[in-house]
Image 1 (tube, rainbow, N blue to C red):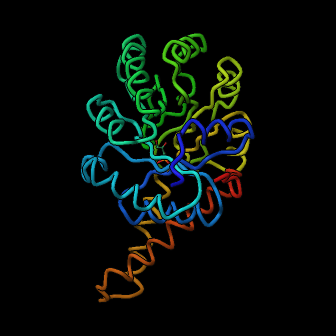
Image 2 (image 1 turned 30 degrees about the horizontal axis):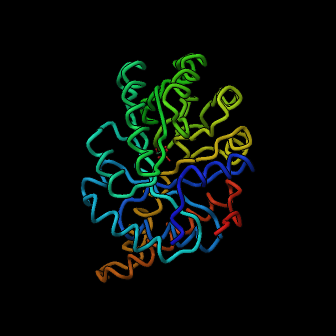
Length: 284
Ligand code: 13P
Protein backbone atom coordinates (compact mmCIF):
# COMPACT_ATOMS: atom_id res chain seq x y z
CA UNK A 1 0.00 0.00 0.00
CA UNK A 2 1.68 3.29 -1.08
CA UNK A 3 -0.31 5.48 1.32
CA UNK A 4 2.35 7.75 2.77
CA UNK A 5 2.08 10.47 5.45
CA UNK A 6 1.44 13.88 3.93
CA UNK A 7 4.43 15.35 5.76
CA UNK A 8 6.80 12.83 4.21
CA UNK A 9 5.47 13.64 0.73
CA UNK A 10 5.75 17.39 1.32
CA UNK A 11 9.09 17.43 3.13
CA UNK A 12 10.78 15.61 0.27
CA UNK A 13 9.27 17.98 -2.28
CA UNK A 14 10.20 20.97 -0.14
CA UNK A 15 13.83 19.79 0.20
CA UNK A 16 14.19 19.17 -3.53
CA UNK A 17 12.04 22.15 -4.52
CA UNK A 18 9.46 20.46 -6.66
CA UNK A 19 5.70 20.75 -6.22
CA UNK A 20 3.31 17.94 -5.38
CA UNK A 21 -0.03 18.24 -7.15
CA UNK A 22 -2.80 18.29 -4.54
CA UNK A 23 -5.88 17.75 -6.66
CA UNK A 24 -9.46 18.05 -5.45
CA UNK A 25 -11.48 15.12 -6.72
CA UNK A 26 -15.26 15.07 -6.93
CA UNK A 27 -16.22 11.41 -7.18
CA UNK A 28 -14.87 7.88 -7.62
CA UNK A 29 -14.07 8.36 -11.30
CA UNK A 30 -11.96 11.46 -10.75
CA UNK A 31 -10.18 9.97 -7.73
CA UNK A 32 -9.20 6.93 -9.78
CA UNK A 33 -8.16 9.03 -12.78
CA UNK A 34 -5.87 11.35 -10.78
CA UNK A 35 -4.21 8.41 -9.04
CA UNK A 36 -3.77 6.63 -12.38
CA UNK A 37 -2.09 9.71 -13.91
CA UNK A 38 0.29 9.99 -10.96
CA UNK A 39 1.09 6.29 -11.18
CA UNK A 40 1.80 6.55 -14.90
CA UNK A 41 4.22 9.46 -14.33
CA UNK A 42 5.74 7.96 -11.16
CA UNK A 43 4.80 11.09 -9.21
CA UNK A 44 3.83 11.48 -5.55
CA UNK A 45 0.30 12.83 -5.28
CA UNK A 46 -2.15 14.26 -2.77
CA UNK A 47 -5.84 13.55 -3.25
CA UNK A 48 -7.95 16.34 -1.79
CA UNK A 49 -11.54 15.99 -0.66
CA UNK A 50 -13.85 18.93 -0.01
CA UNK A 51 -16.21 19.14 2.94
CA UNK A 52 -19.16 19.09 0.52
CA UNK A 53 -17.93 15.98 -1.26
CA UNK A 54 -17.13 14.09 1.94
CA UNK A 55 -20.57 14.87 3.36
CA UNK A 56 -22.27 13.88 0.12
CA UNK A 57 -20.43 10.56 -0.12
CA UNK A 58 -20.04 9.78 3.57
CA UNK A 59 -16.77 9.40 5.47
CA UNK A 60 -16.73 5.60 5.41
CA UNK A 61 -17.69 5.25 1.75
CA UNK A 62 -15.13 7.83 0.69
CA UNK A 63 -12.40 6.17 2.68
CA UNK A 64 -13.30 2.78 1.20
CA UNK A 65 -12.96 4.29 -2.29
CA UNK A 66 -9.62 5.78 -1.36
CA UNK A 67 -8.27 2.51 0.01
CA UNK A 68 -9.42 0.62 -3.07
CA UNK A 69 -7.98 3.03 -5.62
CA UNK A 70 -4.80 3.86 -3.70
CA UNK A 71 -4.02 0.15 -3.38
CA UNK A 72 -3.91 -0.11 -7.17
CA UNK A 73 -1.06 2.36 -7.59
CA UNK A 74 2.53 2.16 -6.50
CA UNK A 75 3.40 5.84 -6.01
CA UNK A 76 3.31 7.72 -2.68
CA UNK A 77 -0.19 9.06 -2.16
CA UNK A 78 -1.96 10.82 0.69
CA UNK A 79 -5.59 11.70 1.39
CA UNK A 80 -6.25 15.27 2.53
CA UNK A 81 -9.36 17.07 3.78
CA UNK A 82 -9.42 20.53 2.20
CA UNK A 83 -10.72 23.73 3.92
CA UNK A 84 -12.65 22.34 6.84
CA UNK A 85 -13.95 24.70 9.52
CA UNK A 86 -15.94 21.91 11.25
CA UNK A 87 -14.13 20.22 14.10
CA UNK A 88 -16.54 17.28 14.07
CA UNK A 89 -15.81 16.40 10.45
CA UNK A 90 -12.09 16.84 11.05
CA UNK A 91 -12.30 14.37 13.93
CA UNK A 92 -14.29 11.89 11.86
CA UNK A 93 -11.84 12.03 8.94
CA UNK A 94 -8.77 11.77 11.16
CA UNK A 95 -10.24 8.81 13.02
CA UNK A 96 -11.08 7.12 9.73
CA UNK A 97 -7.57 7.46 8.32
CA UNK A 98 -7.22 10.70 6.35
CA UNK A 99 -3.51 11.60 6.21
CA UNK A 100 -4.03 15.32 6.71
CA UNK A 101 -6.56 18.10 7.14
CA UNK A 102 -6.69 21.82 6.46
CA UNK A 103 -8.26 23.33 9.56
CA UNK A 104 -9.86 26.43 8.06
CA UNK A 105 -10.69 28.76 10.91
CA UNK A 106 -9.86 31.81 8.83
CA UNK A 107 -13.25 33.34 9.71
CA UNK A 108 -12.32 33.30 13.41
CA UNK A 109 -9.87 35.66 15.08
CA UNK A 110 -6.23 34.61 14.75
CA UNK A 111 -6.11 33.94 18.52
CA UNK A 112 -9.13 31.63 18.46
CA UNK A 113 -7.89 29.97 15.26
CA UNK A 114 -4.56 29.36 16.98
CA UNK A 115 -6.18 27.98 20.15
CA UNK A 116 -8.29 25.50 18.20
CA UNK A 117 -5.54 24.64 15.73
CA UNK A 118 -3.30 23.54 18.62
CA UNK A 119 -6.05 21.04 19.54
CA UNK A 120 -6.41 19.87 15.93
CA UNK A 121 -2.65 19.29 15.65
CA UNK A 122 -2.65 17.26 18.91
CA UNK A 123 -5.59 15.22 17.64
CA UNK A 124 -3.94 14.61 14.25
CA UNK A 125 -0.71 13.48 15.87
CA UNK A 126 -2.55 10.69 17.70
CA UNK A 127 -3.26 9.19 14.27
CA UNK A 128 0.11 10.00 12.72
CA UNK A 129 -1.67 12.60 10.58
CA UNK A 130 -0.72 16.14 9.60
CA UNK A 131 -2.27 19.59 9.56
CA UNK A 132 -2.30 22.52 7.18
CA UNK A 133 -2.95 25.90 8.77
CA UNK A 134 -4.56 29.03 7.39
CA UNK A 135 -5.35 32.38 8.98
CA UNK A 136 -6.32 34.63 6.09
CA UNK A 137 -8.87 32.85 3.94
CA UNK A 138 -9.21 32.91 0.17
CA UNK A 139 -11.78 34.66 -1.98
CA UNK A 140 -13.43 33.23 -5.05
CA UNK A 141 -11.92 34.69 -8.22
CA UNK A 142 -15.28 36.39 -9.00
CA UNK A 143 -14.91 38.42 -5.78
CA UNK A 144 -11.37 39.65 -6.45
CA UNK A 145 -10.73 43.38 -6.26
CA UNK A 146 -7.05 43.28 -7.19
CA UNK A 147 -5.67 44.31 -3.80
CA UNK A 148 -5.90 40.89 -2.12
CA UNK A 149 -2.17 40.58 -1.54
CA UNK A 150 -2.28 43.71 0.65
CA UNK A 151 -4.90 42.45 3.14
CA UNK A 152 -2.79 39.94 5.00
CA UNK A 153 -1.49 39.33 8.50
CA UNK A 154 2.01 40.45 9.40
CA UNK A 155 4.96 38.07 9.10
CA UNK A 156 5.27 38.08 12.91
CA UNK A 157 1.66 36.93 13.25
CA UNK A 158 2.24 34.14 10.72
CA UNK A 159 5.45 33.00 12.41
CA UNK A 160 3.78 33.03 15.83
CA UNK A 161 0.81 31.02 14.49
CA UNK A 162 3.06 28.40 12.89
CA UNK A 163 5.36 27.98 15.88
CA UNK A 164 2.53 27.96 18.46
CA UNK A 165 0.39 25.43 16.57
CA UNK A 166 3.09 23.22 15.05
CA UNK A 167 1.24 22.97 11.73
CA UNK A 168 3.13 21.02 9.08
CA UNK A 169 2.32 23.24 6.12
CA UNK A 170 0.91 26.75 5.90
CA UNK A 171 -1.43 28.32 3.35
CA UNK A 172 -0.81 32.08 3.04
CA UNK A 173 -2.84 34.53 1.01
CA UNK A 174 -0.56 35.97 -1.68
CA UNK A 175 -3.14 37.44 -4.05
CA UNK A 176 -4.44 34.02 -5.05
CA UNK A 177 -8.09 32.94 -5.15
CA UNK A 178 -10.21 29.88 -5.86
CA UNK A 179 -11.77 29.56 -9.31
CA UNK A 180 -10.73 30.71 -12.78
CA UNK A 181 -8.81 34.02 -12.83
CA UNK A 182 -10.11 36.60 -15.29
CA UNK A 183 -6.55 37.79 -15.82
CA UNK A 184 -3.18 36.53 -14.57
CA UNK A 185 -3.18 37.25 -10.82
CA UNK A 186 -0.65 39.54 -9.25
CA UNK A 187 1.04 37.32 -6.65
CA UNK A 188 3.24 38.34 -3.74
CA UNK A 189 5.86 35.63 -4.21
CA UNK A 190 8.27 37.36 -1.80
CA UNK A 191 5.80 36.54 0.99
CA UNK A 192 6.39 32.82 0.33
CA UNK A 193 10.15 33.32 0.65
CA UNK A 194 9.73 35.34 3.85
CA UNK A 195 7.51 32.70 5.47
CA UNK A 196 9.75 29.82 4.40
CA UNK A 197 12.90 31.57 5.63
CA UNK A 198 11.31 32.47 8.95
CA UNK A 199 9.68 29.10 9.69
CA UNK A 200 11.38 26.41 7.60
CA UNK A 201 8.08 24.71 6.76
CA UNK A 202 6.58 24.16 3.30
CA UNK A 203 3.90 26.43 1.91
CA UNK A 204 0.63 25.31 0.30
CA UNK A 205 -0.25 27.22 -2.84
CA UNK A 206 -4.01 27.64 -3.19
CA UNK A 207 -5.95 28.72 -6.26
CA UNK A 208 -3.61 26.97 -8.68
CA UNK A 209 -5.99 26.85 -11.62
CA UNK A 210 -5.04 29.50 -14.16
CA UNK A 211 -1.63 30.49 -12.79
CA UNK A 212 1.08 30.64 -15.44
CA UNK A 213 3.89 28.07 -15.75
CA UNK A 214 6.35 30.83 -14.75
CA UNK A 215 4.36 31.61 -11.61
CA UNK A 216 4.27 27.94 -10.64
CA UNK A 217 8.00 27.42 -11.11
CA UNK A 218 8.89 30.62 -9.25
CA UNK A 219 6.61 29.82 -6.30
CA UNK A 220 7.70 26.18 -6.13
CA UNK A 221 11.37 27.24 -6.11
CA UNK A 222 10.55 29.48 -3.12
CA UNK A 223 9.00 26.62 -1.15
CA UNK A 224 5.44 25.98 -2.33
CA UNK A 225 5.69 22.20 -2.05
CA UNK A 226 1.92 21.59 -2.13
CA UNK A 227 0.13 22.99 -5.16
CA UNK A 228 -3.67 22.90 -5.04
CA UNK A 229 -5.73 22.35 -8.15
CA UNK A 230 -9.51 22.08 -8.10
CA UNK A 231 -11.26 24.14 -10.78
CA UNK A 232 -9.16 22.63 -13.58
CA UNK A 233 -10.45 19.18 -12.66
CA UNK A 234 -14.05 20.37 -12.61
CA UNK A 235 -13.61 21.98 -16.03
CA UNK A 236 -11.94 18.87 -17.51
CA UNK A 237 -14.66 16.62 -16.11
CA UNK A 238 -17.67 18.73 -17.14
CA UNK A 239 -16.35 19.92 -20.49
CA UNK A 240 -15.38 16.42 -21.65
CA UNK A 241 -18.88 15.21 -20.76
CA UNK A 242 -20.48 18.12 -22.58
CA UNK A 243 -18.24 17.67 -25.63
CA UNK A 244 -19.01 13.96 -25.75
CA UNK A 245 -22.76 14.57 -25.75
CA UNK A 246 -22.39 17.31 -28.36
CA UNK A 247 -20.37 15.03 -30.63
CA UNK A 248 -22.58 11.98 -30.00
CA UNK A 249 -26.13 13.29 -29.75
CA UNK A 250 -28.55 10.64 -28.55
CA UNK A 251 -25.83 8.32 -27.22
CA UNK A 252 -26.88 7.73 -23.62
CA UNK A 253 -24.47 4.91 -22.80
CA UNK A 254 -22.84 6.16 -19.57
CA UNK A 255 -19.57 4.17 -19.77
CA UNK A 256 -18.68 5.99 -23.01
CA UNK A 257 -19.02 9.38 -21.38
CA UNK A 258 -17.10 8.13 -18.34
CA UNK A 259 -14.24 6.99 -20.60
CA UNK A 260 -14.02 10.45 -22.13
CA UNK A 261 -14.13 12.10 -18.71
CA UNK A 262 -11.45 9.81 -17.28
CA UNK A 263 -9.15 10.58 -20.22
CA UNK A 264 -9.67 14.35 -19.81
CA UNK A 265 -9.04 14.29 -16.06
CA UNK A 266 -5.91 12.18 -16.52
CA UNK A 267 -4.60 14.63 -19.11
CA UNK A 268 -5.25 17.58 -16.79
CA UNK A 269 -3.44 15.81 -13.94
CA UNK A 270 -0.47 14.86 -16.16
CA UNK A 271 -0.15 18.46 -17.31
CA UNK A 272 0.09 19.79 -13.75
CA UNK A 273 2.34 17.01 -12.44
CA UNK A 274 4.84 17.70 -15.25
CA UNK A 275 4.59 21.45 -14.72
CA UNK A 276 5.28 21.12 -10.99
CA UNK A 277 8.39 18.98 -11.56
CA UNK A 278 7.16 15.91 -9.66
CA UNK A 279 7.25 13.48 -12.58
CA UNK A 280 9.61 10.60 -11.71
CA UNK A 281 9.93 11.66 -8.06
CA UNK A 282 8.13 8.64 -6.58
CA UNK A 283 10.32 6.68 -4.17
CA UNK A 284 7.95 3.79 -3.40
P1 13P B 1 -8.51 26.27 -7.76
O1 13P B 1 -9.95 25.81 -7.76
O2 13P B 1 -8.39 27.69 -8.12
O3 13P B 1 -7.65 25.37 -8.57
O4 13P B 1 -7.99 26.19 -6.24
C1 13P B 1 -7.83 24.96 -5.63
C2 13P B 1 -7.60 25.11 -4.17
O5 13P B 1 -6.84 25.93 -3.73
C3 13P B 1 -8.28 24.15 -3.28
O6 13P B 1 -8.09 24.43 -1.94
